[in-house]
Structure formats: structure tokens, C-alpha cells
Image (cartoon, rainbow, N blue to C red; front, side, top):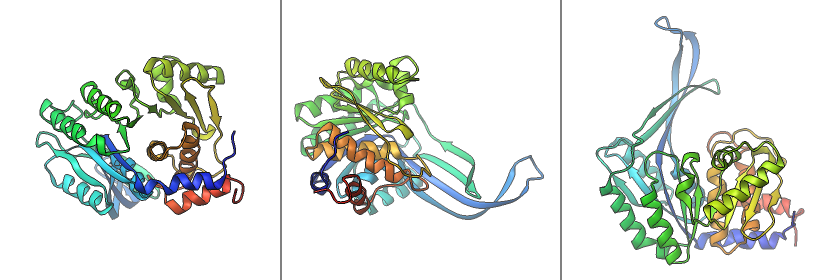
Length: 335
């Protein structure tokens, strides 16, 4: 794999602060309830959790925006919430991170998506989901389309974060891709495995190997199958880049007109892979918007993902720790 100079890597990261990225996707509020278990309920064979603490974190597409904001970029979040208390909690937390919420619309017919995790002794006891995953109504589709038509020209890139909760539809993507191409903006997709037919014509798609296998129609159980799947998706979706994340095996980058290239994983203990895909698409998009090549963008996003999997829970990357990791990967200081 090509060895990059630290000065080259740092120059890209230092340009993040000038970049504006629109993040379109399913907005979730994650609730965490931490407690202890000392007995089994007499009412049913389930643990009794004695609650010690609880809190909320923005989730789903909000985590992509959080990664962008933490690295100094300006994130403009676009999506749907309910008209409820949970929406106010979510928007308040986003506002405190400096994330624009002007593109968030409230639909009284839908609840704000809430995922409640009860955790005792560092283990998840149960998860409770409150959501409506029907496609958004035409009224709110039009509101989002109007927002995109008015604002894409002022952005440096667009990210589609698809959790399959009803927001990302063919009609919405048609508007996003059309406006992005009209204004020559990069458009990246963190995909939902059942929606690959929606994503034709985007710049880059970042599936994990399970999502890529389902989209390709066959298991990825060898290097040959991986190469076949990546090239099939590249041609089928008319994308410029397919970046398949391989967990502990790194990434494979398929670029239009070029030979596929493997980026090895970074040697670090893995504590939690939650949110690593959000970090990859956020950092790749910031890099691409800053003028980095697909391979350079993938290298930096791979370094960022290597940091977040070493943290417990859904986490984001700090600018300083990303620069430190890049310096290390460039050879203890590079040039």
C-alpha cells in the first residue's frame, strides 16, 4: 500500500474546518439506562435492574453529523422527528454540538425514533425500540426536497445515511443525486442492504462486507468473491467508488477504471465496532470534499475507524487523536 507523508495527511485534515456537509438520514435518539442486577423477578424469569444512571445520545444519521462536527466540519442535518419531548432532547443535544437543525422537520404523525438500551454489569439486558418505519408522507418528502434544492449548492458534499426507517426513498434520492450532479458535489451513501437499487449514480458507497454480499447476490467467502462483488456493484450502480469495509481485515477500494486496492486493518485492540461505519463515511466525505483522492480518503477514514473501535460505545474521533494516528502510520513523523 502507498505510504503517505504526514504533511500530506495533515493538510487534508486541516482543511476539514472549511467544509460544509449535508447529512440526510434517519434520525434516532439513543437512550441508555445503566444499573445493577442482584436478583431475578418473582413475577417472571427476568432480571430486576436497579437503575443507577441514564442518559441520551443522538444516534443514526446524527452520529455521522457528530463525527463531522467533532472534526471541525460544519454538519447540516436533514430528516424527520416527531412533535414530542424526545425531539426536543435530540435537537438540544445537536445544537450543543454546533450541528445545524434547520433541515429537521417535525411530523406529528410519527414518533421520534427512540432506542432504549438497558445495561447492567457492562452487558445489554434488553433493547426497546419505539419507531414508525413507514415511508414519509409526500408533504414531508416535498419539504426535504425543497431544502435540498435550496441548500446543496452551498455545501461541499452530501451524505445519505440509510437505516431503513422510512426517510430514504427513491424519490428523495432522485432529487439528492440530481442536485448534487447539477452543482458538482460529491454524494456518499452508507447503505441499507435492501435499498441498493436506490443508489445509482452516487459518488461513493461504503457497505460492509455483509451488505455488499447481499447486494451482489452471493456470499463473500474468498478474495475472488470479494473482487467479483465489488466490481459488480461498481458497474451496476454506476458509482465512482465502492468502499467495502471488512472489519478486522481492513477495507477494499474499488475505483472506476482502476485496479481494486486493499487497505489493511490497523493493529489495535477492538472494544466496540458500534458506529465505525458512521465514522468511515463521515471522514471519507470530509476528505473527498477537501480534495483528497479516493485512496487517500480511504486511508484516512481507515485510521479514524481504527480509533473508534478502540473505544467503548458509539464514539467519535477527536482531531488531535486522528492526527496522532496519521503521524504514527506515516512512519513516526513522516516528512
